[in-house]
Length: 311
Image (cartoon, rainbow, N blue to C red):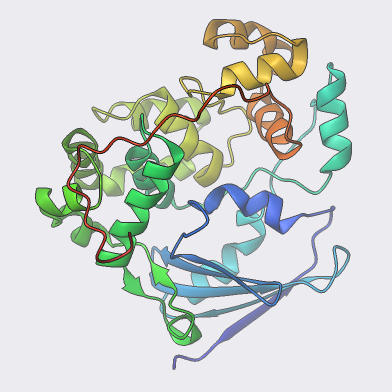
């Protein structure tokens, strides 16, 4: 078992770890995420290598106590405050709709995360393109369980996994993507992403507009995929998930009682320029949105999904 590294950090502002990092979890069966006795465990592939991260907090007012194992441990602990949104600047964010003000009061400890790990968010977002949530999460889960690494240190006993490395992702054959339930179009986009992985990781040091431009320069990475990445990896509080099947309609209904499309959403969120994703996430945390009517979209059954591992 590798030696643990430790860090204790006291946030300067209210911090809700579960809410802040909730979007990093790719579904209930995410192999890179475990909660054990109230402690959060994550398998992370840092630039310096794989790591197991354990976060513990006795109360909302107590410090965040972190332990990490593996080659990526020091990198993770050094960057932990930023990953948990320490640099999230909400200056100028003024709720102009009652539901937004209500959501902010309910979730004062939510912060826009900034993991600094572009591919960690981008590749799963590609896998999640234009499919149901069930398909998206199960597809990525199968890929991680089949091709990811066992998490270092005590992560192994928890059956925690670390996402596949860039060389591993680039070497996954087409039939393995199909077995995981990932269509050829999405698998091809992942292949293009990993070919320019180093260039994409540079987005961390760019302005929001330059980062989005670089991300969307990859064929198959559109506005939605870039936004889903920027929300998590780059701390972009303005990166709305335009093009999502639900987001525009849910926000429109929450704020006006009527559903809107993306064009309507642009107008509706204009007063929140610079903080439009902040509105999206706060409303999502509060459960605000249109009521569900009718059956959910059924998962498609045309891909030869293998259920022998991770299914």
